[in-house]
Amino acid sequence: MASTAQARIKSISYAKYGYIFILPFFLVYCFFQIWPLINTFILSFQGNASTTGEWVGFDNYSTILFGNGGRSAAAIASDFREALLNTVILWVGNFIPQILLSLLLAVWFTDSKLHIPGKGFFKVVMYLPNIITAVSVAALFMQLISNQKTSAFNGWLLNHGHDAIEFEGGMTYASSPGWSRGIVMFIQTWMWFGNTMIMMMSGILGINPSLFEAASIDGATSGQTLRKVTLPLLRPMVVYTLITSMIGGLQMFDIPYLYHTDRASLNEHLRTAAIFVYENFHVANMKQVKYGYSGAASVILFIITVILGIIVFRMNRDEDEHRKKKERKALVKEAKAQAKLARQGGVL
Amino acid sequence: MENVGVSQNYMLKQRIKSAIYFVICVIITLICLVPIYLLIVNATHSHNELIQTPVSLIPGGNIVPNVKAIVTQYTNWNVWRGYANSLIIAGGSTILTVFFSAMTAYGLTVYDFRIRDGAYTFILAVMMIPIQVTSTGFVQFMVGTLGLANSFIPLIVPAIAAPAIVFYMRQYMKSSFPLDIVEAARIDGCNEFRTFISIAIPMMKPAIAVQAIFAFVQNWNNYYTQNMILLSKAERFTMPMMIQKVLRVDKNINLGAQYAAVMLSIVPIVVIYVCLSKFIVGGVALGGVKE
Image 1: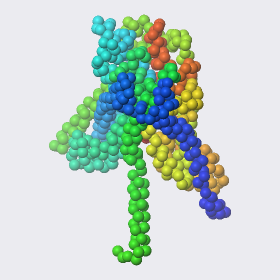
Image 2: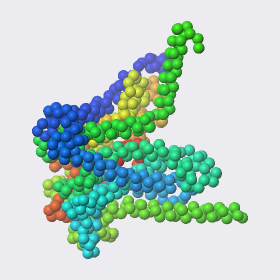
Image 3: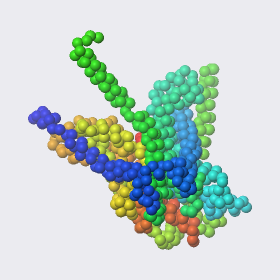
Image 4: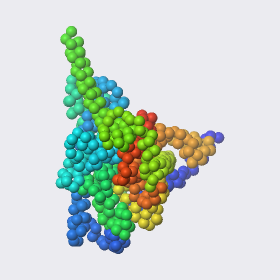
């Protein structure tokens, strides 16, 4: 009985269920992601404000990239260039301390020769800042250190007879971006180093422990083990983190956007590319909305992301499966070549 | 004798090293915790106390009036409504995300059909596309074309398609979901959807739990998308938007109430985190995009 049932089941094709199961994902994805993406491309070739909906070709690109088209266009181009520069500066300034700190901690936490008490507790606490709402984090740091005289830090300075400092960079400090950028970099590092640390730890734990054992039997010091065993084998993980972090850096929005006391003084030194995009499509008056500029800027960010994404994609791909596929292709090719040769009656 | 000396020396060295590293870890831990601690302490002080001593480490006794003041102070927005809205959005998105991601992953693992590999490659390829690059088109389409401003639909329904979570769930199924079970269920006359719901989902509970936590936190914390869609109706504002509004007030500032509002947005998530920290810390390394 069972065998006939089994045979019957084997004869049924279940392929259609595969389509049914993945259908909702693809429908929703097309509607909410693919079409908006295509729409972004379309909008990037259309006009702004009063000319919304008219085709303007590559005008938006030439405006935001090269400032062609009058004085206002030059201003927009310099805004966009500054936004890209800010993004890079803020990203570099948060990534370098973040990766160094997390590598160091990950190495300590995974070293079996060291006995650091409370490892589990440290891990939990260090990851904590990452799960707090970015808005709350920004609000928290705004309350502690900002332009306002009522912020904790300035209040303390005033109470002790010092002048208040304009940490956000204001009228008097317009030319010195140091404080505001430094604080945003610190907040970003504060939020993300725990996450990176855990990624690094999983990378180190994935290294074959016998390698560490061999190194220690051969008398390697911990410095040598780190340089000659851990770091080289951890390279793929570091590269992966670097690139995902770059993609994330392109999206940097919440903290730089929220670190300012009032709307009017949104800091020039903190305006990232994502904020540039946002400011062009998010305006109170729908008649002044600049879909063209924000679309063009989005497309440029998209191209950068795709380039970075391809690198990650190649790393994420199942290496074994990929190799097998290649080998299979090579075999098929060879077989075909031999068949051809046989047909022609040739000999090897 | 000499050997013993060497090993003792070595042990001592390792111990000193461990002690130094421990101290450094304690310092880093303090840097992580102090801002949060200061916030909570400040939330317990009244406005006047905060003006006199902005930085204090000792909690005061003004927490209840401060929390009450959040509501009386800001009559334009109902702050509690913000928490409820965030809960609706985060809860709804989380359920949709984990259910449909599990379903997609199941379809990609269990069935063999022509476009399967192509579909999976597609999911891998789009995993890295951030919302920021599609947001212009997204806003224009949702708000401009479909007129969905102030609607929760554009914030909840897209959660059905979460490539990174599908990727993770598929990895999980590949390693710990035996396909023989599906065949056994078929022989017993179970239809495909029932197999998925009553066999596959219970077996994937660990993966679903981890991803649900992350999805919830991510949606609860989301500010960018919500701020794009929820434009004008104050009763639709979410928690992060409320916090923004509360802090932007410049008349009759009540610092105690401001601190209390920020604290209330952090505390629930911290409590959830402390209870589930084992899953969360274990799940971090398993995928996801970061900043």
